Image (cartoon, rainbow, N blue to C red; front, side, top):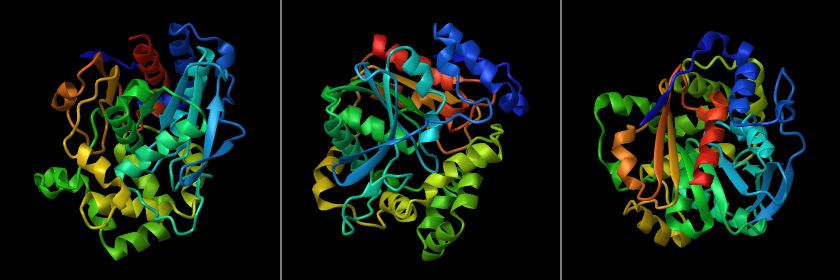
Length: 340
C-alpha cells in the first residue's frame, strides 16, 4: 500500500491550491496551459447535452475528441465540479474527459414525466452504459467518488468489456438490500444518521426545505479539514436545484434499507450485484486520511479486485471528496490504470 504525504497546511489549501496543482501537474509532464482556469474559481465552461436511455444528460467535456475516453462520476451531495480540476490535467495528456451530471443533478433531466425517479444503484449504472452508447464509446476509463464510485464499480463488475480501467475512491462499494438488513455497531450506525432521517417523511420534507444547508453540512463533516469556501460550495449547489434531486436522493437511501421498491427490469442486475462479483479490470483505489464519511478499510476490499490493483492513501487532511481536494493524485491514478 503506497502512501503519500501532503505538506500543505489544510487551512491554507485554497490560498495555495493553484500552485500545488501546478507543481503536481508538472510531475505528470503537463503543460501549464492546461491549468489556465481562473485563479478565483475553476469552470467547465459551456456544457453539452445528449439523450441517453431515460435521460437527457448534461455533461462537461474536455480534451481531444479522438483521445482515450474517461468518464468521471460524482456523488451525493456533490456535482460535476468534483472533477473541475482533474479534467484539465487529463485533457492536457490527451484524454477525452466526460463528466456527466447524474440523474437528479444539474441539467440532467428525465425524458418522460412518468419515469420513476429511481435512485437505486443499478439504475445509475445503466445510465452510464446508456451514455456510453449515445456517445458511441465502446470502452472507457472510469473514475468515481461516493455514489459515483459505487456506480463505476458496478459498471466494471457487470460490463468489464466496456471498461479499460477503474479508479474508485474508498474502494469496492457495491451493496445490496440484504447486506443492509444487518445492524452495525452503534458508532457506525451514527455515521449513517442521514440515511435514517431520509427514511421518514419528516426527513424527506426537511431535505426538500433545506437542501443546500443539508448538503453543506455533509461536505463539512465528510471532509472536516477541507476549507472549501462559500464560492466553491455555491458553484456546486446550483446542481441541487434540479427538480428531481430530492426524489432521487430520498429514493436512493430508502431503497438501500428496503423501504422503497426498485424497478422490476433491474432485478436481474441487482441479483448479480448481491453476489458481490469481483472486479477484474485494472483498478486503483484511493482513500483520504481525513475521510469523515462512512467508508470501509482498504484491507477489507483489496481481494475484490482480481486483476492489476494498486491502492494509495493520501495524507495531509484529505477528506471524502478526494478528486476535488487532491485532483493531481486522482489524475495520476487514471493515467496509471490506463498504462497498466
